[in-house]
Length: 339
Image (tube, rainbow, N blue to C red; front, side):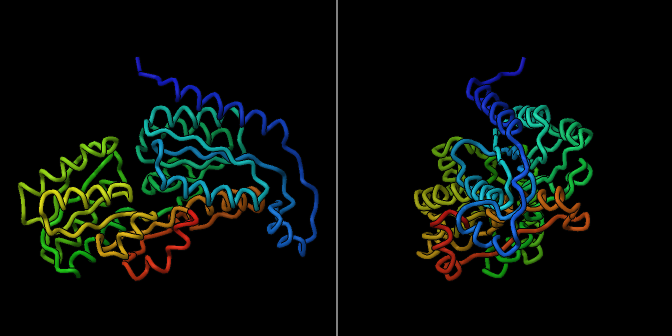
């Protein structure tokens, strides 16, 4: 029998309760003149006259993952503008993520946003959502499976293309041997990032190998990477796949006495500071705020006007290579939690 955590049961119950209460209170907001839209937005009121639809977002985020805080911020701000009741649930276990999606279907939400880090685990439940007439947008992970699973579009970066950008950048920097640190086994997006980086890095004569670590245990991440660097002093580049892991990689490098450059996917305040100081070489920004904002906005456009963006292809929010110079420009946005 699968292990079910008490916290997960509670989140599921809360999601169901919030969805149920919100759907009971759904009603039309009435008309507003077009010229009042800007004024309404500034006052924090809906800028549209459409019904108060309910959209649910269910992601594979673990507890305390600041990346998903930024995704949520974008989604919530779009929801406020679009008169959407936005509800959110997350779990890093795919089975529980699928259960949250089922809860949303049972509550007859008006739209569904889902990340597909482990696509197969959500295939059947997304088929149920589509059959129930609930429009689905996938976000962040699972671009390759999105259309096949019936989603309107996918919003995020193409992970292999993002990886290729990293490999190209490493080659430009003259690096020769890199290690790609994967902190979540089974995450298809992570595998694609490393594969893409290995491909283009190899074209410039570099070599890259994967290092699998236990991402939920930072001391273990540091010790595993430190041991790898001590065993192979020729490694001159370290690639982490999430901003929280970059400082840990820097600590591991220093403890090992390595001269390797540390680079990372994603931004946060710590990464911005380390880019400016030179502790990190570069970061790959996939603009998580934009992923959340556009997911809600595009669902609203579909409900309101049957609009679909992307023409059957993913709507890309990245990659953008960010160095110390760019980090200084973006820092004010990072500090307010939108980059």
